[in-house]
Image (cartoon, rainbow, N blue to C red; front, side, top):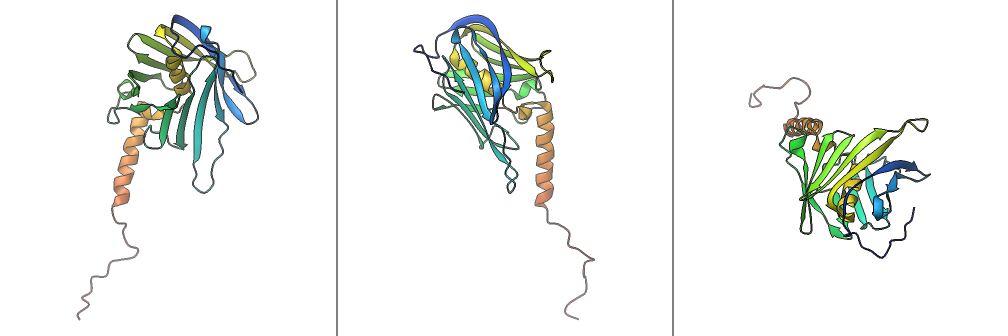
Length: 220
């Protein structure tokens, strides 16, 4: 899926509008696409996963393309995406940094803090797999999954509501992150992290040797 970018850049601002992103699928790719108001057509593109038998992992990549959108690319090493060293996000070639409170238990307290150039964002999982909010000062982009009555399988579409003076960068970040596994940002992710930490501690202890211990004095 290819787009021809228009002359105007992604920093053109629009205040208050809504649009929908609908899923699509080709032989090699899947994603969502829609018309983002005056920004025009926008779509996410990701290859269908190919698992590596030896390492039991795969490289996950989501790209965003659009008429007035910055080139946005998210990459991670699966099966676990914890927004750490094996995760990267770039907007027009500039690296985006992010972090979250890994010690928090509540989902809202584990919101992802995002920094891009002079901007600071907060990305919150309001309802796992269904509702997400990206915020910066004066701008909010809310995404909500809605069951589509059309189609045989009732595939979900994404409703996107934008408030404030949003531009293409805001929309690009929100739409791309919606396609990412955000389990690590939820209470369930906190539980998984705790279980993993306990397992790591247990694995650090020496294993018991097989068979009964021999307490005989070798000097006798």
